[in-house]
Image (cartoon, rainbow, N blue to C red; front, side, top):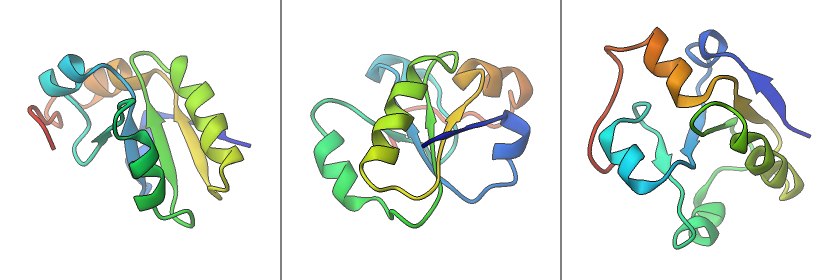
Length: 103
């Protein structure tokens, strides 16, 4: 089962961040250290992530990330979160902490 996480809580968590927005949106701006998840890389990414380390799923507004977080929890990840408010909430609260381009 996944949990909800606020932007404030995420700032204190050492987590793997997955961004499930489209490639153009990710390129235009994303949370530093976030990995873009696409249909092409999702299977490979699942094998590379540490299942014992927290995972935060980020989308646009915190809606789509809930389904993705539930899926990761079903795959055996021990600590999975959906970022409430998504990238837009992060952008509003941390305008100086936005990465651009591909990571």
